[in-house]
Amino acid sequence: ERGICGVRAVVDDTLRALTYSRAASANMDPIEKKPLFHFTPGAKSFSIATAGCNLSCAFCQNWTLSQAKPEDIGARRMSPFEVVSICLENNATTIAYTYSEPTVFYEYMLETAKLARENGISNLWITCGYINEAPLRELAKYLDAANVDLKAWSDEFYVEHLRATRPPVLRTLKILKETGVWVEITNLIIPGANDDPDQIRAMCRWIVDSLGNDTPVHFSRFHPNYKMTDRPATPTQTLQTAHKIAKEEGLKYVYLGNVRGIPEEDTYCPSCGKVVIDRFGYTIVNYNIKNGRCGFCGQKIDGVF
Image (cartoon, rainbow, N blue to C red):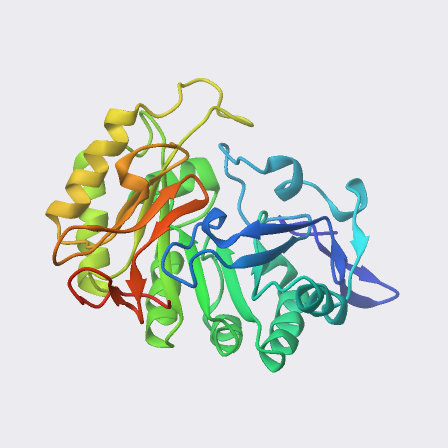
């Protein structure tokens, strides 16, 4: 018998993690793809994942991986030592635990993160944030940055579409901030589901009050997928409305994702307003940050540069 994530089972009277050292996906990505825009921009990130997830999102973009059982999907044997070795051989300065939900391959992630830290490689956790406090605090000792997917501000949305609840995610965000992990947030905006302006405003206000106005927020465009093909892709206007609300609530760094060639994918100095990182998709076109400060006016740009 297995739980929702499907990645642990009793084998020979012992509970085992069936995904340990079994990378179902392993790729070299730009760190911007995570997305992390304020942590070593332009860095190469070795990104790994196994099958499985602890949520059941009807709109999952990676459902063929996240909703699969380990035995139903191809995987490459890759020990923590091999993951770190690949990074060193390819000048990848970060490892991203991503694509599915890294919490379900916790043991594999934790051991890899410890070894990465010993070798000067940064650890990135790309997560839904649904994890108990004790394992989170242990993991946070080895994390450098995280992007947490705050899927909505409505408890009803979490129950209906994820089979989960929202408070554990908010607790995770607070603990990451408390323990010094660099945090960015992604919110996938789905038409008719979590795009209510009042809910978006309440979410942004909580982020400012609980995490700080220096927390980057990425509003991402929804595309019909998996079990949610009954609605269109998010209109650009809806994303821009969310962006406007976030800025009105005082957030300094707000981005729009899954839409290319727009001003809202660039980083602006919060003081002089000039573009300090000019992006096109995941590519940095122009970079004007010097020693963590705006190259034009000298204002500190929050993040790790």
